[in-house]
Figure 1 (cartoon, rainbow, N blue to C red):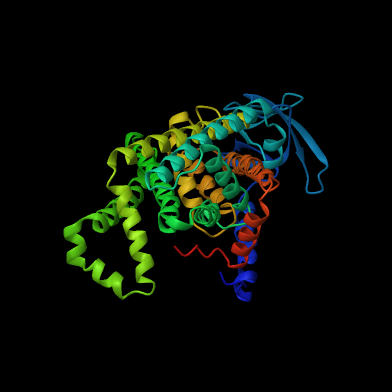
Figure 2: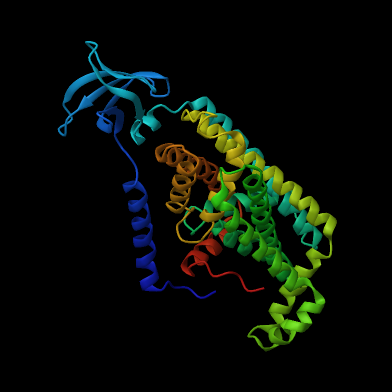
Length: 401
């Protein structure tokens, strides 16, 4: 590998990260607000919710620009807004908790459940990759595959997108299989492609059966899946490969021999449909565990079934994760929050809750990823750490098979 970063890229990446996060957090309400109708118009006031904001009746302390208390209101959802002395201010009172209030009210028992579910989901993903490695003769113990997965997660903290850790996994698994470098590298690619394809298919099914709830997402999801299926068919269909002269063109490309090895490895996988079917089942287990974990995080912030139902999460989470996998931000930060804002408001929930769920999801992933750092303390991990540090200097260049 060749060390050194492009200076311009080194500057632009953090600037882009800051810009995206600034836009996202500027879209949010950081203070509690109450709204009621007076004279046929909506009146919105800022202040502080007294007590549990998730109940159907609260006390709301209205504050001025300096943060000083102006008056105390008694609010009940859909009823009139009243002052403490019984004066009616307006009809159909509603309120929305700001981000600080939402995070201050988190229920840790739901977060603990989510962490357990995320770990179970990870075990499905580890088993999927372990079987894919064995299929092409890259024999490794299940525990070692889990170790490599955790190292990938750990490195994902500094790599762009939710797939950034895949680059680290590819470097490490190729290093452990020098005689089958192309097959080891392809195992990471196939593992990610199958995971994303299953995720997209799961989201599409829910979008299609959800009536008008996600109507505007049907065409983009159908297009995304059709593009993927069409590309796979064009690549693996022998007749179409000949018609498109893919093999002839590949021989003229730089590193033709190495590309041929990758191509052979890919076709090895797709010549075992039963094993690929098993990989899809493991993917479903992985995604289901993660989705239910995000549902638990929603419950920790008081997201009710009326706001976002469990079935809704089976569309929301896959779509947000697909968007977050675009390699723009480390760990998908900012991009994922923007996706959750859009998706939560699409079904009538608040942007604040969407961001709270997204941020807590990422923090849980960070906690799981940090466990990967423990594997770097093991004997013999110095060489792996050197490889990962060199990879970071190379700005994520994939290993050559």
